Length: 107
Image (cartoon, rainbow, N blue to C red; front, side):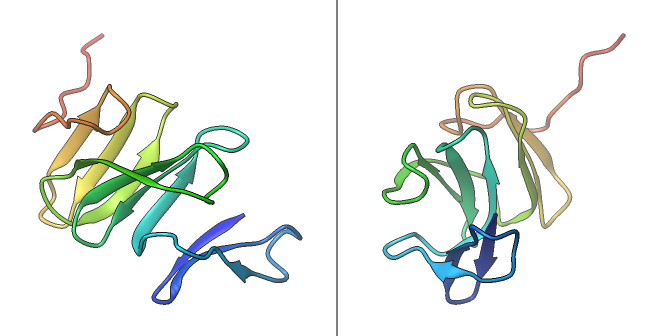
């Protein structure tokens, strides 16, 4: 389990009973897991980060058009976010670029 805090990213290996800081992680407002060791997160400034080693190292990959109000990974490549001004965006390339605005496929 991961938690974003004002002091940085925290991890719990015991279902949230105890948390430990992940050293050297970027300050993020949102984080999501897309696999065993794959994480993706959004910084308070809209910067998007990925980690392939359970948060030990991070790479800045792209940027949202504003600070995130909500952020979710559908899978490793597809990310959805809502910015604080209400804009909903989608990335289909693992957070490198976001389409504005997101338009769901019609059925």
